[in-house]
Image (cartoon, rainbow, N blue to C red; front, side):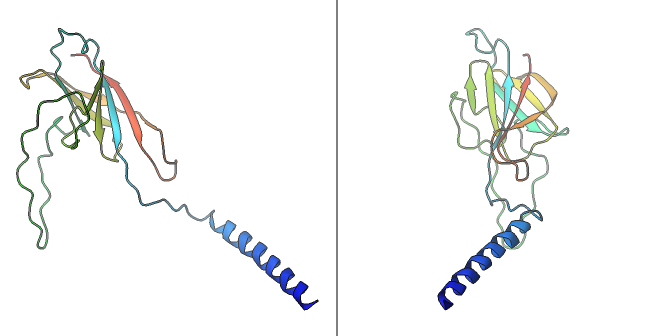
Length: 168
């Protein structure tokens, strides 16, 4: 009979533990320590035509920035940190994914949609520049961004995409 009481006590203890831990969920949400990239999809009507002068699309997030250019201020290294060297020239776009999305320039082109991978930030506005083969800016304008999350959760965030249309 002593064995039956032990089982009953263990079952009651397990139930109390489940109830107690279930109550903890209401206090906070634990988000996994992960990162992701977001994307800005820029629809450029007519850019898929063989006669189109559009060669590159660049983006920057925020109101005071230049698309495709690094920020004017660079972080000051602390301690024994060594500052990074100057940015190297970017190879010609190939229409395929590139390894480094910063400064934010076209990383994928699918017809008239140019996709720029960005960091985890979701600014409410940005600037888009459309450039020709020589690098001359044909159009540059401010855009409002409306982000749609397509992964993660409302509490923890996750990968998102903003879509805008800019005419050359």
